[in-house]
Amino acid sequence: MLQARGEEAINDHIALRTFNLAPVNLGALSEIFTRRGYRQSGEYVFEAKKLLAASFSHEDPDRPRVFISELRTELCSGLVQETARELVSQVQHSGDELLLKHPTWSAVTHERYQALLAESEYAAWLAVYGLRANHFTIAVNRLETFGEDQPLVALNRWLKAQGLELNQSGGEIKGSPQALLEQSSTMADLFDAHFAGGHIASVPSCYCEFAFRHPDPGSPTGLFDGFVTSSADKIFESTHAR
Ligand code: NI
Image 1 (tube, rainbow, N blue to C red):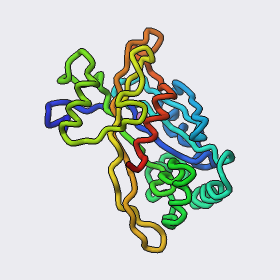
Image 2: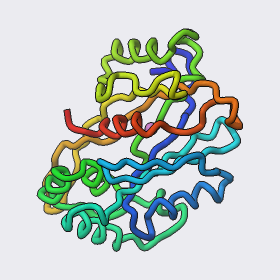
Image 3: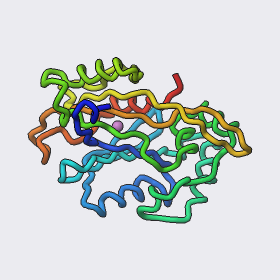
């Protein structure tokens, strides 16, 4: 839709979710990127969601930042711990193949999915989709047709006029000019997931985020390069069922 408007959609960042268990933990996934010249730009803790996360940037401004989070399974119930161990034990590869080989693990039953969902939406999503981009993020700073004054507000208005539903958790725009980062996102599309035993059910999948970064003289790019924990906490909820 943006391309049809004459825009080039450049990614601000992509986001990956994982369990904190070898060989798929945050450290293992981050190596895929640091090997390619990415450097860590921040570390984040999400107490309620039991997540640890880190962000990575590349000196080439056309390469997306990468935001990787991991579920701290030891803080979760026996059911989540057991499921995570079961799924991760199926992963026999390493390096780039962690992200490129799909499916990452075999399907769980729908009953297991619902039990995970009751405790952790993050764990349930990860069990279904494995290691893949949870969302892509349009760099709003790089858009040219939404004006200079509050382009994210203009973009959101246009997205809604196109019929897209935006995440309203914590307000339509998360963050502020003072926080140096403003973000919005669509709600995840639904996808017919195939569960073990042949059951098919419609579950939230992936979404698109929009990020506007404010100037930060301390950053190599001149723009704020990190993430804001309180905003990211609400963006995670883009994969919640309506
Ligand atoms: Ni994001």
